[in-house]
Image (cartoon, rainbow over all chains, first blue to last red; front, top):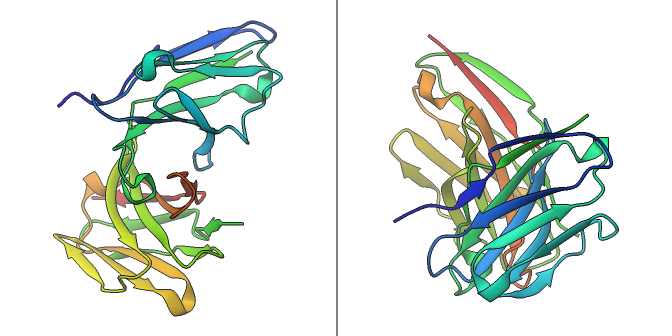
Length: 116
Length: 115
């Protein structure tokens, strides 16, 4: 079974530029998460999708971050414009559609973003 | 509000020593789930264990064991006879039953195992 795929793996941009990350979850997983992991910290949830609907985006900086999940499969996370403090690893995860709170999340390799 | 505290920032051990990672959590819910994840240098988070709030039995899986105590809101993790491959950052996380699976992670504990 293929795991969660993410691209690109690394990205370096200048502040005020825009960037987009892509995620393809495990086949059949209806729930998709985007986390931000700043160096030395645990991952923090940015947004959660159930199929193609948003369940939780309370910690997403909506003035600069946006995300979509078309057709309930792949997802894209965008930052526009980027700030220095956005430098982090962006992790995508997916989980089984049933009893989501109880199930482990499967994580992708992450995208390491550096904003200069 | 939920919170997970991993007070140990880094633990260094010599191979074959045991190492215990502490995790203390806070939640108002009576139904919740606790997790441990491993993050090796490659960066990908790897699921290790899930425990629900109604199951306080300790668990052993090979060299790994977990001690869940609701009375002290702790879910500690022990690696017995550590190996160099155990070097990683370990995260404890909490999910509330009605929180749609949102994981609240601790800050993580870096384990360094030297030969």
